[in-house]
Structures are given as C-alpha cells and as structure tokens.
Image (tube, rainbow, N blue to C red):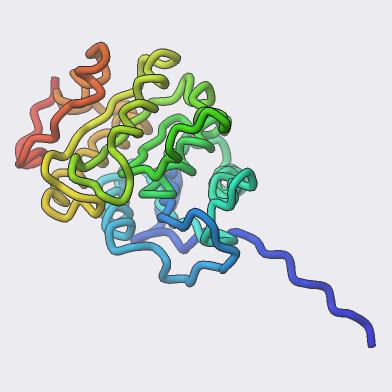
Length: 254
C-alpha cells in the first residue's frame, strides 16, 4: 500500500477584523500567545478576547486611513526552541501582507509568546513598528544566546507590561528594552502598575495607548505627550513610563 504523504502545515491570516478597507494603506498583524513547546495546531479561536479587542480598536481607529488588521493563525502552538515557529509565522504573515496589499507599512503586534514573535520578526523589510505586550522571554542563561535586538533598528517599538505579571517576568522585558534602546532610540516601554498578565484592570488604557502608538507609527499622526516623552527620555525613564489611569479619555497631543 502506498504511504500517504503527511500534509505540510501552513500559517494563515484571518479575515480582516471589522470591514476591510477598499484601499489598504497599512496593516497590523495580531500575534496571539502560544506555548513554550507544543506541536499541536492552534484552533481557529486560539486568539484571546484581548487580541480580538485590540484588533477591533485598531480597525475602528484606522478605518479612515485604510488600515487592515488580521490575526495570524500559527502552524503550531509552540515556540519550540531554535525552530522559533511563531516568529517564522510572523515573518510569513508580513510577506503575505506585501503579496496582498503591496508596499504598505506593517505593524507586528503580539501578546505573550506572540510578543516575543513580534520582536524577533521585527526586522522584516515591510515592518516599520512593533508592539509587544507582556512578552514571554526566556530567563537569562549563560549557555544560551541573548534575545536579538539589532533587527529592531529603524523600527518604532512599544513594550507594555503589568508590574504584577506572574506569568511573564516584567523585569526581563525591561532588560530587553534597555538593550534595544542602545541600538535604537525609537524604543519605549510602559508599565501598568498593579496589573497582571491579562491587563484586565486597565484594559481601556492599554487599548488607547496601543492605538495612539500604532496610528503614529503607521500614518505619522501626532502621538500623545506620554508616548512622545517615553520615546525621547533616556533609560531608564522612558522604559519605566507609568501608564496613567484614564489614559485615552482626553489625549493631549504634544
């Protein structure tokens, strides 16, 4: 009996969040979380409610600009060591945006393990900005190479982390941000005080911050004063910027 070939898994993009613009002038790729090691394929509802909320907010705020937002469906749930499957799928997704929409700027926006994928894939030539929320980063190990940061040169980068996160260590994201800032001045990091991994207590503020940052990075809109200050401030000030309660209710442009 002839042996059947094992189907090759492929990544894919969701349908555009909200109504896809008639003319697309920029794209956000939403990268959900994952697991450290897993060969299982994520379900089509793998994206968390938080990721979907981010997509809806960005699709709404960028509708008049021609912004398309898509969730990336990974081949595997796991990062899987040196395979870095999630980062590979993020790079594929950026290629797919170029194939579909042409030469438009892309923002990679990831949560948890997806935040690490966004940082790794940030060097793609179509990517001009990266948002990494509560990123999962490996513990420092003298036997393992440091997380790369040189690929972020020339990109605008935002990292957001809750100070009470017990699933992903906020100190590790600070250390990575400090290293990235040495290579690229366009890096900032906001701390959400007293909030945990899911950022449930200050969800509205996080959504407003991310939208403000992405619209500025993709379309050159004036960003809020806190984002402007965080980008301009030297370490550690601009990397430990507190996200104020009520951010987004009355943004004052600098």
